[in-house]
Length: 288
Image 1 (cartoon, one colour):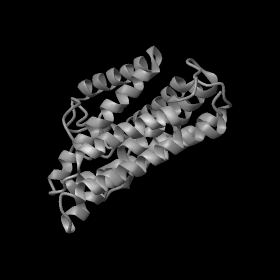
Image 2 (tube, rainbow, N blue to C red):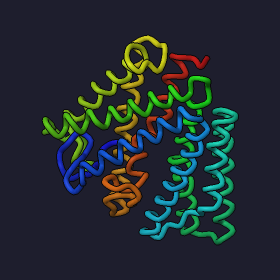
Image 3 (cartoon, rainbow, N blue to C red):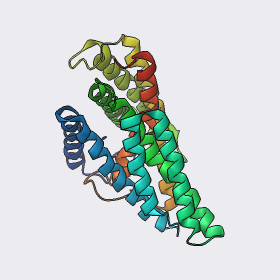
């Protein structure tokens, strides 16, 4: 949901050079509008959208792994993805975890039937990683969607992640000089991280308690905790994907989104932040 990132320049979120910024902004706003429309027309449309997006991201990851001769079994992984996301929305957290375990078991059996040895171990490890990183973490967004006020919870979560990306980019590109993790993602700076924290907390407070739109009837500290949790986990998710792309010798995970790269390049922050947002909102603002 951000405007597009690379490791080329020392900015807070690792942006700019090599990206068509107007295109990236246009695509980012279109994606945000699509998320909003899917949430507030019929929230099940958002669940269907999540299935399509996560499925495409699984395919992108499988193609990226092939560069290193790693072959994850797509059929059981995609079937398990559907099971995890549907279980999360229909039956809750315990069902999500059970579906994850079944998916892992299914991918292991499927791959072992194709042969054993070191290649099988490598493929199985990559499959477990893919199942945990993509559909399992995405399932927490569907858990947030469950309650009557679920669309507002998900929308607040997405807006805070967008604010984190935007604040990091704006402050990092203008003031960023102190690199945050030069060996992993040279474009990220401490100044950009500060920008992410400030804007994410402001948007969290406004959306949770104070402003227009007021998405939740909560105390201001809920927005602060949400902003802090999202920024820390989104940053870790972004750094983790940067490390993976370096290992795979890729600039982007795909080319599905003009100005952004692949879907995985836009989901990295959202995925790891989803469990944090779910836990903060579920504990501090119990569902009605």
